[in-house]
Amino acid sequence: MGVASFQQLSDEFCDAAGVERQHLVQDGAGAMTFSTDILDVAVNVTHMQATHPDHAFLLVDFGPAPEQDEALALRTLLLINFTFLGHETATAFSIHPVYGNVTLQATYPLHKCSGAHLLKSIRILADSALQWRQTHFLPEGTESFDKQAAEIDLGLRA
Image (cartoon, rainbow, N blue to C red):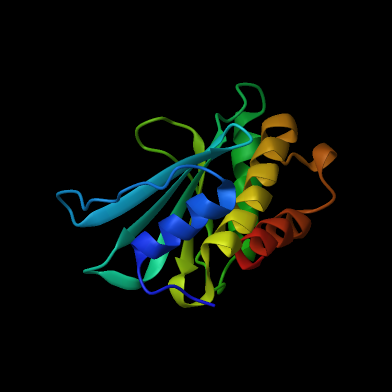
């Protein structure tokens, strides 16, 4: 498995998803990004050749934190973050600085993936985002923090 270039990863991903290929261009900071919506979940996949040639970075929009129980929902995400400690994917939940939505950030090793692999991973992460939008991973909505982390990690290793 593995891809020779980020453009190849993007092309393979688009082919696997059955969508038109995107021509990627570096922005002023040297980053290349392609975006997709899976199940109404926005996902950006970014590559920075100069600083991180062997990795892509995923941003998955999980949506806004709930107005009611916001502190508990965000605390739950921090507990889930702790279970990711030491994972190769450096996964973490954050709040997007521009949009304010809960965002899953993950590092994705290019040497282990193909476009089809990435699509499978993103579909699993989109399912997790949809679950978050319904339950906010609050204790009554899930069995354990470890279970949530394991499902997300599975998405990244799919």
